[in-house]
Image (tube, rainbow over all chains, first blue to last red; front, side, top):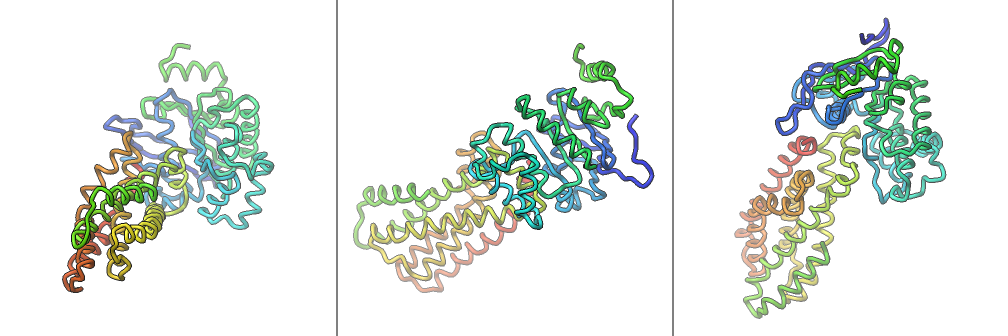
Length: 245
Length: 196
């Protein structure tokens, strides 16, 4: 079963009794999820299982119909603005303005987050993301892999403690995937709390401290990865998602 | 927006070949139809850039109140419309041979434009989530701004007819009340509009 935070640690994310529907179709049903500070949780699930909806709820883009979400000790309903300062979010889209350069995008988001010493911070995240030579390029001229790197720079610009990633590997080629993998591994080493949804078993099982399966609108399964083998998890995944192995 | 407004003025000018006192009767309607339709074109673009590239969600992830996004977008739309009006009014004045640069007329133009921007920004945020957004926005926008259009046309007509200030005041009050109500309502509702 899911392990809780040790003594002196805390939950970075607590979602209790979350429900969310679209056009009267329930997507999440009484979902409970807890993520300890500094841990890396990978969430698997079939298409349409509600992974993106869950990330949007956790990131305060959307609000749950029932239940509560507490992030970094703050309720997202009451302190959404403060909660967002603790979150770095990567969605399917880059959330960057196509016609602006990478630098202009980072400046814009940096100002929105009141990032101190912004130019130094932009230089730091661009160096980390391998985008130094592309800072002055309009985003629309970059490849999908480079755009994704720019999206990572955007998400890390304000040095958030918690990262929420929704299928971040989508559309990346092998080289870009490897670079992104290394970035995630180093962020994990830094002690960031990371929640990532993905269909990529290799990514999810190697990077995550914990794995979870979202099925029928609930976290149907959550376990420490250390106790799991790939073969065992494959069987569990297919059982919950009703796909023949 | 600007090109559309100029084209409409030119077309109306040739379509209604009016002279003398008739100009003052027709001109207010032509002016405000032009500005209202041109405004819709601008409002249609207000959120498209953000929506198409997911930047709207980027803004929603920023540590700011959602109402701040509304004020920012409203201010941008208002500025665009005022710039268009600053260019259109002199040309309109030339085409229709009317003295439009009067303080009371400029006041009517400003407060009416605030009303358009207040409503247009809110409905633009609603329409951008729909498939037929270019059609949806006018359907939502025009019925609601009817009071402003009527007040603006009536007010402009009175100014051109050199009517006393007292007769103009009720129309101004109507537009100001509209502005206050719709700015407040739009600001309060914007959070829910963005999320849905």
